[in-house]
Length: 295
Image (tube, rainbow, N blue to C red; front, side, top):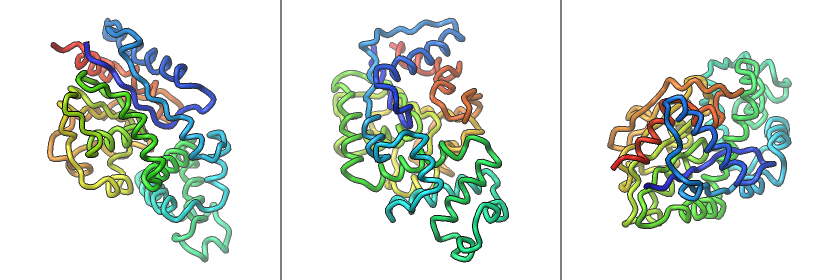
């Protein structure tokens, strides 16, 4: 039997890795039940490399709610992080139809005079976005902050990558299922030189709610490529997920090989981005099951 590796993204910080792993498994099992199937693995065959403490450190030890509030109302982050966040947030807002007048309505005159290049404008975008898509402000601010820190802080990136890499057992086939920031991490690990596992095959790589096709992320992960040890790549997204803007097709994310996209997930979580709303999707659950049980 193949191993299953879950690679998480933004998680609830008051829970430990074991609890989160249990939630992921239960959500997947719910999707399996919709297909009349049962989990074919023991818990030991499912690995959940947990880097939640690193995420807490990335947010300065703040809770998710506190960190989101700081991003929306506090000082600008470091220049490199700000550049990634600015690009991501602006692209998300444009995709969601946030107009300049919506942004200006959130800003003071002095911020408006400084123009779109200042951090206050970005904070106005986040507030305007929440007016159009309720509950989006927190998830967009947190995910973009996580991705920005991951992409611009080599030490943090290495720490997270090493943790995920250590979960992949050489010589054992692995189905890798990733979510949100985790899709960026998993892709980075699978395509990096140090991520090469000559004795390991990944018959299926799953990305859920992925921001890989957002330009600020895509442009910082070059060169693009299809991970050499991966057999098939399956990407699933809810069309209302404000983090996963585009399907992973050549127009948005060209790896030189075909990625199978499922764009009809009906993610029932409050922000349409939560992992349980992806894993309990009938088609997603079945695709993972088929890869695990294939001869």
